[in-house]
Length: 186
Image (cartoon, rainbow, N blue to C red):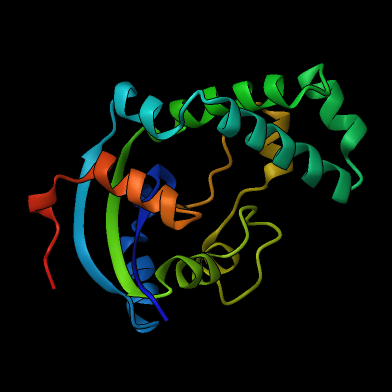
């Protein structure tokens, strides 16, 4: 098993609801170590670097939304909302909504380290849509939003946390959010 580092961001909805302690506790109980953390008000330039306008990320967000709408028999409704079936169009709308949301209030950024940290964090965090996340996960127990409702409103899903999805993504995100001196060496 590989020791990995990963980034977690408690989003404005989690900070506003005073859930930082509960969220950190769940990761620590799973054996993950917090090696950096800071409260910050995200400015647009950082948000735009985090949620890039790369073709891969934009199309990925669009495809994820289209796929979820098909799985939930809401495809026709999503097409009406976005007035398009083009994942790039949908992804661009969602990227802009995510930038607006992440800059709407303070966030708490964390670097966690542990055995298979990325997979473990994703397991503890739960499915992206809080309304569909399993009980026992952060989003399943503490989440209150729904992707379908958020998409209808053309806004980001208020799903408490962001968690890096891969080793490559984690490496890029950690450098974006933290200076090397802010990370505890173990």
